[in-house]
Length: 508
Image (cartoon, rainbow, N blue to C red; front, side, top):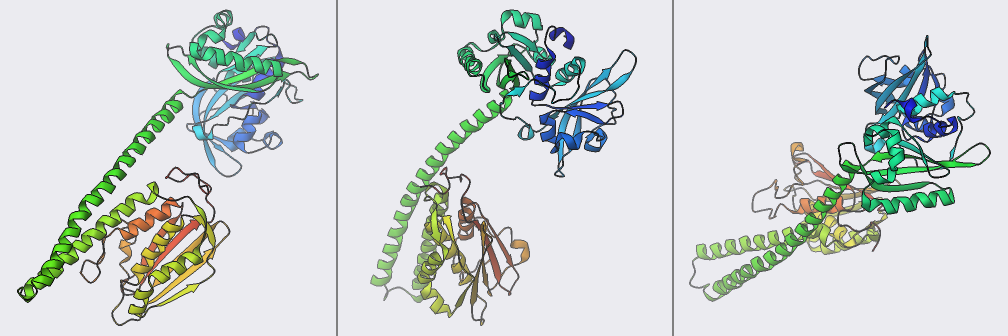
Protein backbone atom coordinates (compact mmCIF):
# COMPACT_ATOMS: atom_id res chain seq x y z
CA UNK A 1 0.00 0.00 0.00
CA UNK A 2 1.62 3.27 -1.08
CA UNK A 3 1.72 6.26 1.24
CA UNK A 4 -0.27 8.60 -0.97
CA UNK A 5 -3.18 6.19 -0.98
CA UNK A 6 -3.42 6.44 2.81
CA UNK A 7 -3.24 10.23 3.03
CA UNK A 8 -5.99 11.38 0.68
CA UNK A 9 -7.81 14.36 2.19
CA UNK A 10 -5.44 14.55 5.18
CA UNK A 11 -4.48 18.19 5.87
CA UNK A 12 -0.79 19.07 6.04
CA UNK A 13 -1.33 20.18 9.67
CA UNK A 14 -2.13 16.57 10.59
CA UNK A 15 0.91 15.27 8.72
CA UNK A 16 3.20 17.73 10.50
CA UNK A 17 1.80 16.56 13.85
CA UNK A 18 2.58 12.96 12.87
CA UNK A 19 6.21 13.80 12.15
CA UNK A 20 6.86 15.92 15.20
CA UNK A 21 5.02 13.53 17.54
CA UNK A 22 6.78 10.42 16.22
CA UNK A 23 8.86 8.42 18.67
CA UNK A 24 11.22 7.71 15.75
CA UNK A 25 13.95 10.21 15.03
CA UNK A 26 13.37 11.97 11.68
CA UNK A 27 16.08 13.91 9.81
CA UNK A 28 15.70 15.63 6.43
CA UNK A 29 18.89 16.16 4.40
CA UNK A 30 19.42 18.01 1.15
CA UNK A 31 21.05 16.62 -1.98
CA UNK A 32 24.50 17.31 -0.50
CA UNK A 33 23.79 15.39 2.72
CA UNK A 34 23.32 18.47 4.94
CA UNK A 35 20.60 18.37 7.63
CA UNK A 36 17.68 20.69 6.83
CA UNK A 37 15.12 19.60 9.44
CA UNK A 38 14.75 17.30 12.45
CA UNK A 39 12.02 16.34 14.88
CA UNK A 40 12.28 16.40 18.72
CA UNK A 41 13.03 12.66 18.92
CA UNK A 42 16.02 13.08 16.59
CA UNK A 43 17.26 15.91 18.82
CA UNK A 44 16.97 13.59 21.83
CA UNK A 45 18.79 10.69 20.15
CA UNK A 46 21.59 12.95 18.89
CA UNK A 47 21.86 14.81 22.18
CA UNK A 48 21.79 18.08 20.21
CA UNK A 49 19.27 20.85 19.72
CA UNK A 50 17.87 21.51 16.24
CA UNK A 51 19.97 24.67 15.98
CA UNK A 52 23.13 22.57 16.40
CA UNK A 53 22.04 19.97 13.85
CA UNK A 54 20.89 22.24 11.02
CA UNK A 55 23.57 22.54 8.35
CA UNK A 56 25.65 19.63 9.72
CA UNK A 57 26.85 16.88 7.41
CA UNK A 58 24.80 13.73 8.09
CA UNK A 59 27.93 11.62 7.57
CA UNK A 60 29.55 13.40 10.55
CA UNK A 61 26.97 12.12 13.02
CA UNK A 62 25.83 8.86 11.43
CA UNK A 63 27.99 5.95 10.26
CA UNK A 64 26.24 3.19 8.35
CA UNK A 65 27.23 -0.45 8.86
CA UNK A 66 27.83 -0.90 5.14
CA UNK A 67 28.96 1.53 2.50
CA UNK A 68 25.48 2.75 1.64
CA UNK A 69 24.66 6.06 0.03
CA UNK A 70 22.05 8.41 1.49
CA UNK A 71 20.74 8.90 -2.04
CA UNK A 72 19.75 5.24 -2.24
CA UNK A 73 16.12 4.18 -2.47
CA UNK A 74 14.26 3.20 0.72
CA UNK A 75 16.34 0.75 2.69
CA UNK A 76 16.58 -0.56 6.22
CA UNK A 77 20.19 -0.63 7.43
CA UNK A 78 22.03 -0.52 10.77
CA UNK A 79 24.25 2.37 11.72
CA UNK A 80 25.98 4.10 14.64
CA UNK A 81 24.80 7.51 15.79
CA UNK A 82 27.53 9.73 17.24
CA UNK A 83 25.79 11.32 20.22
CA UNK A 84 27.09 14.59 21.66
CA UNK A 85 28.11 12.90 24.91
CA UNK A 86 30.62 10.79 22.99
CA UNK A 87 28.62 7.57 23.10
CA UNK A 88 27.89 5.50 20.00
CA UNK A 89 24.19 4.59 19.78
CA UNK A 90 23.23 1.66 17.50
CA UNK A 91 20.28 2.68 15.31
CA UNK A 92 18.19 1.24 12.50
CA UNK A 93 17.98 3.66 9.57
CA UNK A 94 15.31 3.89 6.90
CA UNK A 95 16.32 6.18 4.04
CA UNK A 96 13.65 7.56 1.69
CA UNK A 97 14.43 9.86 -1.28
CA UNK A 98 12.82 13.24 -2.00
CA UNK A 99 12.60 13.70 -5.76
CA UNK A 100 10.99 16.00 -8.25
CA UNK A 101 10.12 14.88 -11.77
CA UNK A 102 13.64 15.62 -12.93
CA UNK A 103 16.01 15.77 -9.96
CA UNK A 104 17.04 14.29 -6.62
CA UNK A 105 16.33 16.84 -3.86
CA UNK A 106 17.43 15.03 -0.71
CA UNK A 107 16.44 12.25 1.69
CA UNK A 108 14.37 11.56 4.78
CA UNK A 109 16.24 9.45 7.34
CA UNK A 110 14.21 7.74 10.10
CA UNK A 111 16.21 6.57 13.11
CA UNK A 112 15.19 3.90 15.62
CA UNK A 113 17.36 2.99 18.62
CA UNK A 114 18.21 -0.72 18.32
CA UNK A 115 18.29 -1.30 22.09
CA UNK A 116 14.86 -1.25 23.75
CA UNK A 117 16.42 0.44 26.77
CA UNK A 118 17.70 3.21 24.49
CA UNK A 119 14.49 3.68 22.54
CA UNK A 120 13.23 7.19 22.90
CA UNK A 121 9.64 7.13 24.08
CA UNK A 122 8.74 10.62 25.28
CA UNK A 123 5.73 11.09 27.48
CA UNK A 124 2.45 11.89 25.69
CA UNK A 125 2.01 15.61 25.20
CA UNK A 126 0.01 18.20 23.36
CA UNK A 127 1.05 18.60 19.73
CA UNK A 128 1.08 21.89 17.89
CA UNK A 129 0.11 21.12 14.30
CA UNK A 130 2.84 23.13 12.63
CA UNK A 131 6.33 22.68 11.26
CA UNK A 132 7.93 24.90 13.84
CA UNK A 133 7.92 27.88 11.50
CA UNK A 134 9.82 26.08 8.73
CA UNK A 135 8.56 26.21 5.16
CA UNK A 136 7.93 22.54 4.44
CA UNK A 137 5.50 21.36 1.78
CA UNK A 138 2.91 18.58 2.00
CA UNK A 139 4.89 16.13 -0.15
CA UNK A 140 7.86 16.30 2.22
CA UNK A 141 5.66 15.69 5.25
CA UNK A 142 4.12 12.68 3.53
CA UNK A 143 7.55 11.19 2.86
CA UNK A 144 8.65 11.91 6.42
CA UNK A 145 5.55 10.30 7.94
CA UNK A 146 5.86 7.27 5.69
CA UNK A 147 9.49 6.79 6.74
CA UNK A 148 8.47 6.11 10.36
CA UNK A 149 9.16 2.48 11.33
CA UNK A 150 6.33 2.25 13.89
CA UNK A 151 2.55 2.53 13.40
CA UNK A 152 1.25 6.11 13.65
CA UNK A 153 -2.41 7.08 13.34
CA UNK A 154 -4.74 10.07 13.50
CA UNK A 155 -8.30 10.56 14.73
CA UNK A 156 -10.07 13.79 13.77
CA UNK A 157 -12.18 15.89 16.13
CA UNK A 158 -15.16 13.55 15.51
CA UNK A 159 -13.05 10.52 16.55
CA UNK A 160 -12.94 9.28 12.96
CA UNK A 161 -9.82 7.46 11.74
CA UNK A 162 -8.34 9.68 9.03
CA UNK A 163 -4.80 8.39 8.73
CA UNK A 164 -2.61 5.35 9.36
CA UNK A 165 0.96 5.31 8.11
CA UNK A 166 2.48 2.52 6.03
CA UNK A 167 4.07 0.80 9.05
CA UNK A 168 0.65 0.54 10.69
CA UNK A 169 -1.04 -0.86 7.60
CA UNK A 170 1.77 -3.36 7.06
CA UNK A 171 1.47 -4.49 10.69
CA UNK A 172 -2.27 -5.10 10.35
CA UNK A 173 -2.00 -6.42 6.78
CA UNK A 174 -5.00 -4.41 5.59
CA UNK A 175 -5.75 -1.43 3.38
CA UNK A 176 -6.55 1.93 4.93
CA UNK A 177 -10.05 1.90 3.41
CA UNK A 178 -10.85 -1.50 4.95
CA UNK A 179 -9.43 -0.48 8.32
CA UNK A 180 -11.39 2.77 8.27
CA UNK A 181 -14.56 0.98 7.27
CA UNK A 182 -14.29 -1.77 9.91
CA UNK A 183 -13.02 0.48 12.70
CA UNK A 184 -9.61 -0.06 14.26
CA UNK A 185 -11.17 -1.07 17.61
CA UNK A 186 -12.28 -4.32 15.97
CA UNK A 187 -8.62 -5.20 15.42
CA UNK A 188 -8.07 -5.27 19.17
CA UNK A 189 -8.57 -8.24 21.45
CA UNK A 190 -12.22 -8.27 22.64
CA UNK A 191 -11.10 -8.06 26.27
CA UNK A 192 -9.20 -4.81 25.60
CA UNK A 193 -11.75 -2.87 23.55
CA UNK A 194 -13.84 -1.38 26.36
CA UNK A 195 -10.82 -0.11 28.26
CA UNK A 196 -9.27 1.40 25.12
CA UNK A 197 -12.48 3.18 24.15
CA UNK A 198 -12.75 4.63 27.66
CA UNK A 199 -9.17 5.97 27.57
CA UNK A 200 -9.64 7.56 24.14
CA UNK A 201 -13.03 8.97 25.12
CA UNK A 202 -11.50 10.72 28.12
CA UNK A 203 -8.68 12.05 25.91
CA UNK A 204 -11.24 13.58 23.55
CA UNK A 205 -13.37 15.06 26.33
CA UNK A 206 -10.38 16.52 28.20
CA UNK A 207 -8.28 17.15 25.07
CA UNK A 208 -5.41 15.55 26.96
CA UNK A 209 -2.55 13.07 26.43
CA UNK A 210 -3.31 9.35 26.64
CA UNK A 211 -1.56 6.02 27.08
CA UNK A 212 -2.86 2.45 27.13
CA UNK A 213 -1.83 -1.17 26.55
CA UNK A 214 -3.82 -3.55 24.39
CA UNK A 215 -3.51 -6.63 22.22
CA UNK A 216 -3.64 -5.94 18.48
CA UNK A 217 -4.32 -8.43 15.72
CA UNK A 218 -1.24 -8.69 13.51
CA UNK A 219 -1.27 -9.68 9.85
CA UNK A 220 -0.29 -13.26 10.75
CA UNK A 221 -3.43 -13.68 12.88
CA UNK A 222 -1.68 -13.37 16.25
CA UNK A 223 -2.83 -10.97 18.97
CA UNK A 224 0.23 -9.14 20.25
CA UNK A 225 0.64 -6.76 23.17
CA UNK A 226 1.40 -3.16 22.30
CA UNK A 227 1.55 0.18 24.05
CA UNK A 228 -0.05 3.23 22.43
CA UNK A 229 0.60 6.81 23.44
CA UNK A 230 -0.29 10.17 22.00
CA UNK A 231 -1.93 13.50 22.57
CA UNK A 232 -4.23 16.18 21.20
CA UNK A 233 -3.53 18.23 18.05
CA UNK A 234 -4.27 21.95 17.91
CA UNK A 235 -3.92 24.42 15.07
CA UNK A 236 -2.18 27.77 15.42
CA UNK A 237 -5.42 29.32 16.73
CA UNK A 238 -5.77 26.72 19.46
CA UNK A 239 -8.61 24.84 17.76
CA UNK A 240 -8.75 21.15 18.69
CA UNK A 241 -8.19 19.03 15.57
CA UNK A 242 -8.08 15.50 17.01
CA UNK A 243 -5.63 12.99 18.45
CA UNK A 244 -2.35 11.66 17.12
CA UNK A 245 -0.98 8.37 18.45
CA UNK A 246 1.82 5.90 17.92
CA UNK A 247 1.94 2.21 18.75
CA UNK A 248 4.93 0.11 19.78
CA UNK A 249 4.91 -3.70 19.85
CA UNK A 250 5.93 -4.83 23.36
CA UNK A 251 4.76 -8.44 23.12
CA UNK A 252 8.20 -10.07 23.36
CA UNK A 253 9.24 -7.74 26.17
CA UNK A 254 6.01 -8.39 28.09
CA UNK A 255 6.35 -12.16 27.71
CA UNK A 256 9.95 -11.96 28.94
CA UNK A 257 8.85 -9.92 31.98
CA UNK A 258 6.03 -12.37 32.73
CA UNK A 259 8.44 -15.29 32.45
CA UNK A 260 10.91 -13.51 34.71
CA UNK A 261 8.18 -12.79 37.29
CA UNK A 262 7.10 -16.44 37.21
CA UNK A 263 10.71 -17.57 37.63
CA UNK A 264 11.15 -15.14 40.54
CA UNK A 265 8.11 -16.61 42.29
CA UNK A 266 9.44 -20.14 41.82
CA UNK A 267 12.84 -19.04 43.09
CA UNK A 268 11.20 -17.44 46.12
CA UNK A 269 9.37 -20.68 46.93
CA UNK A 270 12.56 -22.67 46.39
CA UNK A 271 14.52 -20.36 48.71
CA UNK A 272 11.91 -20.73 51.44
CA UNK A 273 11.99 -24.50 51.08
CA UNK A 274 15.80 -24.50 51.19
CA UNK A 275 15.83 -22.32 54.29
CA UNK A 276 13.29 -24.58 55.97
CA UNK A 277 15.42 -27.59 55.02
CA UNK A 278 18.60 -25.91 56.28
CA UNK A 279 16.97 -25.13 59.63
CA UNK A 280 15.70 -28.69 60.05
CA UNK A 281 18.98 -30.17 58.87
CA UNK A 282 20.90 -27.98 61.28
CA UNK A 283 18.79 -29.11 64.21
CA UNK A 284 18.84 -32.76 63.16
CA UNK A 285 22.62 -32.74 62.60
CA UNK A 286 23.51 -30.78 65.72
CA UNK A 287 21.54 -33.03 68.06
CA UNK A 288 23.56 -36.27 67.50
CA UNK A 289 26.78 -34.23 67.57
CA UNK A 290 25.87 -32.85 70.97
CA UNK A 291 25.26 -36.39 72.20
CA UNK A 292 28.62 -37.58 70.86
CA UNK A 293 30.33 -34.69 72.66
CA UNK A 294 28.42 -35.48 75.85
CA UNK A 295 29.23 -39.21 75.80
CA UNK A 296 32.86 -38.59 74.89
CA UNK A 297 33.21 -36.27 77.90
CA UNK A 298 31.53 -38.89 80.07
CA UNK A 299 33.87 -41.58 78.73
CA UNK A 300 36.91 -39.38 79.26
CA UNK A 301 36.03 -38.52 82.86
CA UNK A 302 34.79 -41.97 83.96
CA UNK A 303 37.42 -44.11 82.23
CA UNK A 304 40.39 -41.78 82.43
CA UNK A 305 42.35 -44.18 84.63
CA UNK A 306 41.68 -47.10 82.28
CA UNK A 307 42.32 -45.41 78.95
CA UNK A 308 45.85 -45.21 77.62
CA UNK A 309 47.45 -41.91 76.72
CA UNK A 310 46.85 -42.74 73.06
CA UNK A 311 43.15 -43.46 73.79
CA UNK A 312 42.73 -40.12 75.57
CA UNK A 313 44.40 -38.35 72.63
CA UNK A 314 42.00 -40.06 70.22
CA UNK A 315 39.03 -38.84 72.27
CA UNK A 316 40.34 -35.24 72.20
CA UNK A 317 40.86 -35.44 68.42
CA UNK A 318 37.31 -36.76 68.03
CA UNK A 319 35.93 -33.91 70.14
CA UNK A 320 37.79 -31.28 68.09
CA UNK A 321 36.49 -32.82 64.86
CA UNK A 322 32.93 -32.75 66.22
CA UNK A 323 33.30 -29.12 67.34
CA UNK A 324 34.55 -28.20 63.88
CA UNK A 325 31.52 -29.97 62.38
CA UNK A 326 29.25 -27.96 64.67
CA UNK A 327 30.89 -24.72 63.55
CA UNK A 328 30.52 -25.76 59.92
CA UNK A 329 26.79 -26.41 60.32
CA UNK A 330 26.32 -23.12 62.17
CA UNK A 331 28.28 -21.16 59.54
CA UNK A 332 26.34 -22.73 56.67
CA UNK A 333 23.08 -21.77 58.37
CA UNK A 334 24.33 -18.19 58.84
CA UNK A 335 25.30 -18.03 55.15
CA UNK A 336 21.85 -19.19 54.04
CA UNK A 337 20.17 -16.56 56.22
CA UNK A 338 22.08 -13.48 55.06
CA UNK A 339 19.33 -12.32 52.73
CA UNK A 340 16.32 -14.29 53.97
CA UNK A 341 16.72 -13.31 57.62
CA UNK A 342 18.41 -9.96 57.12
CA UNK A 343 16.99 -7.04 59.09
CA UNK A 344 15.88 -3.74 57.63
CA UNK A 345 18.54 -1.12 56.92
CA UNK A 346 18.69 1.59 59.59
CA UNK A 347 21.16 4.39 60.40
CA UNK A 348 24.13 2.50 61.86
CA UNK A 349 27.14 4.01 63.61
CA UNK A 350 30.22 2.12 62.45
CA UNK A 351 32.19 3.36 65.45
CA UNK A 352 29.68 1.72 67.79
CA UNK A 353 29.77 -1.51 65.75
CA UNK A 354 33.58 -1.69 65.92
CA UNK A 355 33.58 -0.99 69.67
CA UNK A 356 31.23 -3.96 70.13
CA UNK A 357 33.37 -6.20 67.89
CA UNK A 358 36.59 -5.26 69.69
CA UNK A 359 34.91 -5.91 73.03
CA UNK A 360 33.89 -9.37 71.82
CA UNK A 361 37.47 -10.04 70.69
CA UNK A 362 39.14 -8.48 73.74
CA UNK A 363 40.23 -11.83 75.16
CA UNK A 364 41.87 -12.85 71.86
CA UNK A 365 43.49 -9.41 71.45
CA UNK A 366 44.97 -9.71 74.94
CA UNK A 367 46.03 -13.32 74.39
CA UNK A 368 47.85 -12.48 71.15
CA UNK A 369 49.20 -9.21 72.58
CA UNK A 370 47.85 -7.50 69.47
CA UNK A 371 47.72 -3.80 68.74
CA UNK A 372 44.56 -2.54 67.01
CA UNK A 373 44.55 1.00 65.59
CA UNK A 374 41.57 2.90 64.18
CA UNK A 375 42.61 5.65 61.71
CA UNK A 376 40.07 8.12 60.39
CA UNK A 377 36.52 8.91 61.42
CA UNK A 378 34.03 6.08 60.99
CA UNK A 379 30.74 7.23 59.40
CA UNK A 380 27.10 6.46 60.07
CA UNK A 381 25.43 4.62 57.18
CA UNK A 382 22.20 2.80 56.36
CA UNK A 383 22.83 -0.87 57.10
CA UNK A 384 21.80 -4.01 58.97
CA UNK A 385 23.66 -3.56 62.30
CA UNK A 386 23.75 -7.26 63.16
CA UNK A 387 25.23 -8.20 59.79
CA UNK A 388 27.86 -5.45 59.95
CA UNK A 389 28.84 -6.85 63.34
CA UNK A 390 29.22 -10.28 61.69
CA UNK A 391 31.23 -8.76 58.85
CA UNK A 392 33.81 -6.92 60.97
CA UNK A 393 34.02 -9.69 63.55
CA UNK A 394 34.93 -12.14 60.80
CA UNK A 395 37.58 -9.88 59.25
CA UNK A 396 39.19 -8.87 62.55
CA UNK A 397 39.10 -12.44 63.84
CA UNK A 398 40.93 -13.51 60.65
CA UNK A 399 43.54 -10.80 61.19
CA UNK A 400 44.12 -12.06 64.76
CA UNK A 401 44.31 -15.69 63.69
CA UNK A 402 46.72 -15.91 60.77
CA UNK A 403 49.80 -14.44 62.47
CA UNK A 404 53.50 -14.64 61.75
CA UNK A 405 55.58 -16.41 64.34
CA UNK A 406 57.60 -14.02 66.49
CA UNK A 407 56.00 -10.89 64.99
CA UNK A 408 53.79 -8.80 67.31
CA UNK A 409 50.41 -8.53 65.53
CA UNK A 410 49.31 -5.07 64.42
CA UNK A 411 45.89 -4.47 62.87
CA UNK A 412 45.05 -1.08 61.32
CA UNK A 413 41.51 0.00 60.46
CA UNK A 414 41.25 2.95 58.08
CA UNK A 415 38.05 4.75 57.07
CA UNK A 416 37.42 7.25 54.31
CA UNK A 417 34.09 8.74 53.15
CA UNK A 418 33.44 10.73 49.95
CA UNK A 419 29.83 11.73 50.58
CA UNK A 420 28.20 8.79 48.81
CA UNK A 421 30.43 5.83 49.69
CA UNK A 422 32.59 4.90 52.62
CA UNK A 423 35.73 2.81 52.23
CA UNK A 424 37.07 0.78 55.13
CA UNK A 425 40.42 -1.00 55.03
CA UNK A 426 41.53 -3.66 57.52
CA UNK A 427 45.28 -4.21 57.26
CA UNK A 428 47.32 -6.77 59.20
CA UNK A 429 50.97 -7.82 59.32
CA UNK A 430 50.22 -11.53 59.44
CA UNK A 431 50.95 -14.42 57.14
CA UNK A 432 49.32 -12.90 54.07
CA UNK A 433 48.69 -14.97 50.95
CA UNK A 434 49.82 -15.32 47.36
CA UNK A 435 48.35 -12.65 45.03
CA UNK A 436 46.81 -15.32 42.75
CA UNK A 437 44.48 -16.29 45.60
CA UNK A 438 42.98 -12.77 45.89
CA UNK A 439 39.87 -13.67 43.85
CA UNK A 440 39.45 -17.17 45.30
CA UNK A 441 39.69 -16.23 48.94
CA UNK A 442 35.99 -15.30 49.17
CA UNK A 443 34.75 -18.56 47.66
CA UNK A 444 32.98 -20.95 49.99
CA UNK A 445 35.09 -23.73 51.55
CA UNK A 446 38.34 -22.12 50.40
CA UNK A 447 41.01 -22.38 53.11
CA UNK A 448 44.54 -21.24 52.37
CA UNK A 449 45.82 -22.77 55.61
CA UNK A 450 44.93 -26.44 56.09
CA UNK A 451 46.81 -27.36 59.26
CA UNK A 452 45.17 -27.84 62.63
CA UNK A 453 46.81 -24.68 64.01
CA UNK A 454 44.19 -22.62 62.18
CA UNK A 455 40.78 -24.22 62.69
CA UNK A 456 38.12 -22.89 60.34
CA UNK A 457 35.33 -23.91 58.03
CA UNK A 458 36.17 -21.95 54.87
CA UNK A 459 32.84 -20.11 55.07
CA UNK A 460 33.72 -16.94 56.99
CA UNK A 461 34.95 -14.84 54.07
CA UNK A 462 32.16 -16.13 51.81
CA UNK A 463 29.73 -14.93 54.49
CA UNK A 464 31.52 -11.55 54.59
CA UNK A 465 31.21 -11.11 50.84
CA UNK A 466 27.51 -12.02 50.89
CA UNK A 467 26.84 -9.45 53.62
CA UNK A 468 28.68 -6.74 51.68
CA UNK A 469 26.82 -7.58 48.46
CA UNK A 470 23.47 -7.45 50.27
CA UNK A 471 24.37 -3.89 51.24
CA UNK A 472 25.19 -2.96 47.64
CA UNK A 473 28.92 -2.77 48.27
CA UNK A 474 32.14 -4.49 47.23
CA UNK A 475 34.92 -6.29 49.07
CA UNK A 476 38.41 -7.16 47.86
CA UNK A 477 41.66 -8.49 49.30
CA UNK A 478 45.33 -7.94 48.61
CA UNK A 479 48.22 -9.84 50.15
CA UNK A 480 51.72 -11.18 49.87
CA UNK A 481 53.28 -14.16 51.70
CA UNK A 482 54.73 -13.16 55.09
CA UNK A 483 53.81 -9.51 54.45
CA UNK A 484 50.24 -9.38 55.65
CA UNK A 485 46.90 -8.74 54.00
CA UNK A 486 44.58 -5.79 53.32
CA UNK A 487 40.81 -6.20 53.06
CA UNK A 488 38.98 -3.26 51.45
CA UNK A 489 35.24 -2.79 51.87
CA UNK A 490 33.23 -0.15 50.02
CA UNK A 491 29.66 0.52 51.20
CA UNK A 492 27.06 3.13 50.18
CA UNK A 493 26.15 5.58 52.92
CA UNK A 494 22.52 5.54 51.79
CA UNK A 495 20.58 2.65 50.30
CA UNK A 496 18.89 3.84 47.10
CA UNK A 497 17.97 0.53 45.43
CA UNK A 498 15.98 -2.59 46.34
CA UNK A 499 18.24 -5.30 47.70
CA UNK A 500 17.88 -9.02 46.95
CA UNK A 501 16.00 -9.74 50.18
CA UNK A 502 13.03 -7.87 48.66
CA UNK A 503 12.98 -5.04 51.19
CA UNK A 504 12.91 -1.47 50.02
CA UNK A 505 16.29 -0.12 51.01
CA UNK A 506 16.32 2.20 53.94
CA UNK A 507 12.86 1.13 55.07
CA UNK A 508 11.67 -1.04 57.87
